Length: 446
Figure 1 (cartoon, helix red, strand yellow):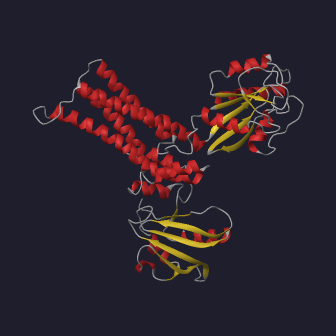
Figure 2: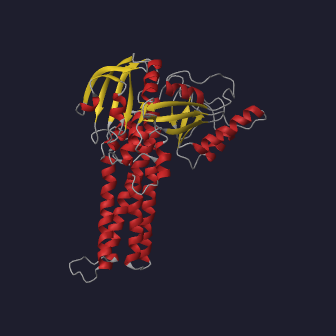
Figure 3: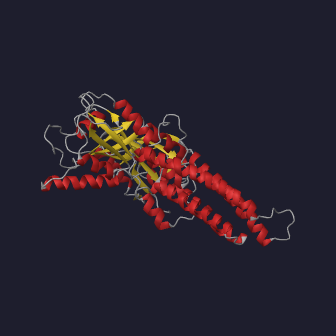
């Protein structure tokens, strides 16, 4: 943390400008050695200065604008310099190399954000939300990330922790100072309803957070059916492009084809699978095996049937294979006379009839029909959700202890564990090696 670090913070490629970020105790004086312009060691914080970066021979390397940000009023809470250079790939690299000739080293991926966290500038939810903002695939995902950056999500967790801490503190007072007359005697009659109320809040958080997770990460969706029912045609219709090859020949799709489509703010990661049927063709069978694997991994299954024909044994096998999955049954080829009689969403991939009803059904099946008006102030990161799950299990242990008439001080152990699990969401009680692993997944220069 005593090192001064630098990295390119803008995307690789040719652009109008690029930004190189420098952070650490030596950021201002070290860069000042190679800067021709105002003496940066004497300027005020949050000011921008024009000048040139000097090459080793004293010649001008590039014309730049330099922003000076002094601790603690910077992203990392350290002294920082942001150098805006011309955006050519070669010149940006040359300026960075010149900066690294000073007592400055190249930053590790995510090291700027890690320093911001370690210096108390942001908590772990905010840090992870910064990366979520960068990788957001929809407006809804942007909303989720912004709530994390604005501390709204962190505040939700802190409120739960405050309630837990209040119960724990009162139990400890009872244990350590039994003679204190003004203390509320924390009996199981008091702790049980408070624990149940906390569990109710946590269950709501978990339920809504899983929805946020789907919005943030996308929903892996397998399009399945026997050969020639129109799976590839349906994929193309949803994408509004010819992604998959479509022919009248059964078994045209031999391997899974992936594509993404945004349905009113929800990203579906569509997998068009090979038609599933009994076959002696070795290559086709390999595709069918991959299709069955895609079904196992899918969060949503779109089972396509040909409603212009009666159900076949292969159709019935697929219905049985997916009965325990979150699925929608789609009757394709609505433009032809109907022969199949089974409840399904009627569509025509050829004419695109029924696609809007299918989109509504998808959102309803995912419990995201309220996507435009829903409250997004919940978690979306799998690490966060797992920590909430740990807290839930600890609170459930409290109720078990109450049912078994255990001493009150036993409750405090599980209540404290729940409090710690929620604290790990914010980055409290986190070990250094786990933090390094987490921040290593961030962008270089972030």
